[in-house]
Image: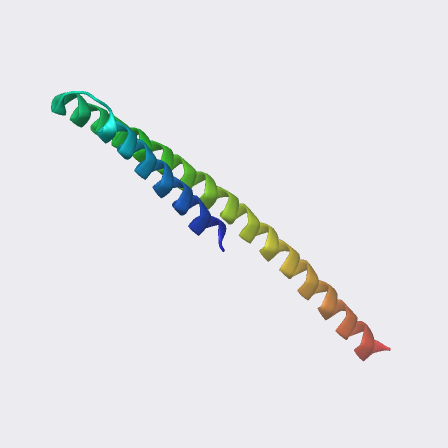
Length: 86
């Protein structure tokens, strides 16, 4: 299971639980709609932040992997050149 799918599942589960809690609470329809709207806005903001955090981490990992790949290629080329010379 990928990390992205896991976090998506967690976010969906949290949203469903929060919505169920609001809908089952004894209050007027107007209060319920206000709470749902507030929860939706909060959830969207948190989801956006989480996605940005994951994207930054993924970008960093990809950058590190590219640097290491370049280092490996350089070392292999050096070894090949030494073999040709020797």
